[in-house]
Length: 335
Length: 230
Image (spheres, rainbow over the protein chains, first blue to last red):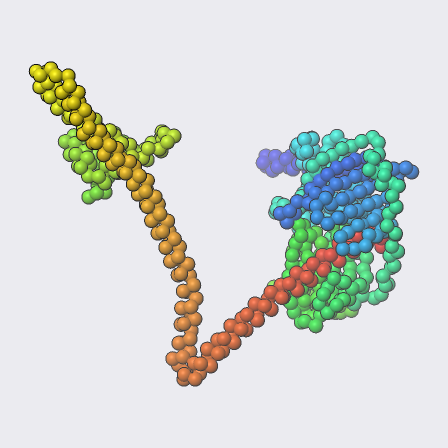
């Protein structure tokens, strides 16, 4: 009797503590989002994955007309730059002509959502403020973005107490295994726009390419039967996997899903092979999964655990099909 | 026997008599002094003890006893002529001839210097030989190791041929000779098939890598363009 009362008390204390942590964590993340959009900063960071470290330089500033200016540069190996002037984002990549697109999204090692609306993540993740530690010689607040289910990874963010900017980020499995890390090595916040960005403001970006709505309204021959909670379709189309050397271009049906933080691509195409055992590879936290089941080749790519990718791949079924066959298919793949 | 001896030497080195009876240890010391091998162990144990206690001098003199005994020998040779000289001196005291004493001195000096030179030569030789002996020991150890490794290396491939040898007669005993030949052919073809299979596996792996790479690349590309169509 006494004991149960004690537990109840403990529980209530815990619950209140957790909600307090969540609140402060959310505030920290919102501050991060504001800082990433509003500050003039110049930083360097290193992406550590696959036992390799890739250094980047990242400049951000507010130019004339409140236009956001941003430069991401990979410092090792072939040039990889992401340039941004307001809504125009340019990608300069080693094996492609430079191009620009109109987008509010900048693809860089830093997930885009952290500069966007953090509350979009609340459906699938919990925010927990853990404690303070010293990162990059500064006082940092550790915030964990924890998946609500077992189908996603967890993200740990160390946020600068002073500026609200990110000092370190880690992607971990639920078991706590470290998959990918971003460690900032230098951070500088300035009132004024840096000279580099002033100069960049005057340069002209590559021509904007028009993105045609690629046969979007076409009826799809395949459907994804299962996705982790919180994922929704971003787009779907049919295109050719161009770098596929076997038998030239291969048309695939493509769907892109996101839960706000993580993107998952699903590729489906009929294959002349009947069966191929699942094969997968991972690049840091990014998993690439591929198999052929019942003459259907399915590829799943994204920052998700293998089990999730497998489950998604096995849930693929022809769009017009009776339920029985669908379950038979997935159960066969389950074994 | 020698093990017991070396054990008792070891305890002697550690200032611990192997038996309460002092006479036995004295006997042991006598034995040790006679036996070169035992004195060698004595020396080695002391060296080991020095190394363990970290008391090794900067320049390691491994044949200290040798040099000491050489020095003693030197001393001894000088002593005995000296005594001779003393006796001759006593003799010459009676004659009190300075010349004789000088000549005596010179004649006495000569053998002593000869002995001195010979003992030094010995010492030199032994000091030369000692390290060589050590080198020889090290070399023989290395040779043993190499032989051992070679033996190991030789052993591992011999496992697979023996299996091959085993499998051929197994089919051969039960079948006519012509069939045996055929079976060896089939073995060859089997090997070829195995090679083919390996090749296929390798190419399959390359294809797999390519497939996955293509997916990853396309994913990254689509994600970049993706936000546009919302």
